[in-house]
Amino acid sequence: MKRALSVLLALAACRANPPAQSGAQGPRRELEFLGASRFPLHELEAAVDTDLGEVADRKSPKSAVDDAAYALVEFYRARGFPDCTVEYELVEVTPAHLRARFTIVEGVQTLLAGIELVGNARFDRAELLAAAGFSDEPRPYVESELAHVADALAAHYLSKGYLDVRVTEPQVELDDSHEHARATIRVEEGACYRLA
Image (cartoon, rainbow, N blue to C red):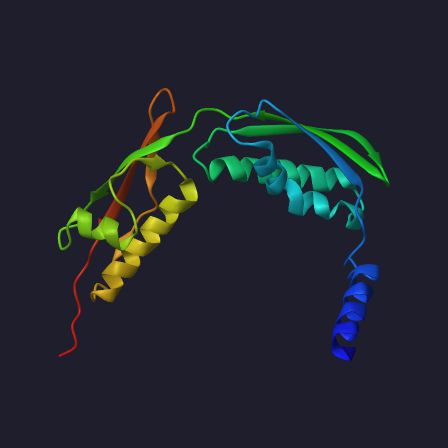
């Protein structure tokens, strides 16, 4: 009985004294995302949350909103919208309220239609793409992912003894509509070294 009473008292104390919030409480936010049609509002809000959550700690709220606009551009680029642009307007700033308007020009989603490998004689294309975690399935074109493909190709060659391998940065061509991209990666394999 005493134990049950102790548990109830402990639970009541937790409800009466919630854990302290770390950091300063920021202003209430009112955000507009004009031109955004491809992603739900909660995803756009999540994309800017970190930058706008720091607004109370910054000397200039404008810098936080500027960083949030850049975060939106990166959000779209990571989903295959390389031509996305974002402009913003800081409508109202008070210690209790932040109102910002983001005007988004999404552009079209670009699909990576293929990767051409040039200079790979020792390993076939399918093996190299698999080593890089890619396939021939169309996927959204994300520039940073292609840079990782080049790094993965070089790592694959190095693991097989090709210590002089050189892999170029991907050269990307977009079609006129920007709906499809093709990438070319050049490989200079060099000699294979083996322990004797």
